[in-house]
Amino acid sequence: MNVVCLVYRRACRELLLGAADRRLLLRLLRELSVNTVQRRLAWNSKEQFITLWFVSAGRFPEIYQTAFPGWLARQLPFNIEPHEL
Image 1 (cartoon, one colour):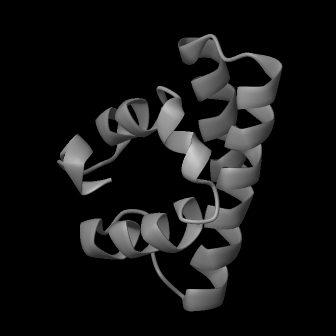
Image 2 (image 1 turned 90 degrees about the horizontal axis):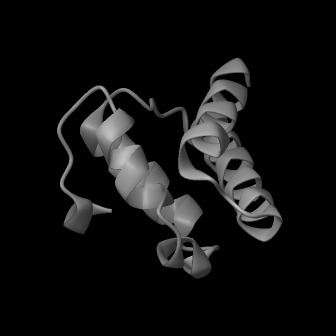
């Protein structure tokens, strides 16, 4: 859970998100966290992260209207293209 908090704080600081986008981002990060544990997958593996992203972000299609996916792609410990998200 600590990682989710850090990602959330950093994204809010760097992206200038409004209140609605902050709530959406927090819901997405919680969903990612839950799916990570339930599916026993890792955020630091590209293939596993993409699986987690599709499972989680699919519940929040409006996330693609924000700057978060592009920002997140630049923060990951591996190279991921925006079209992969």
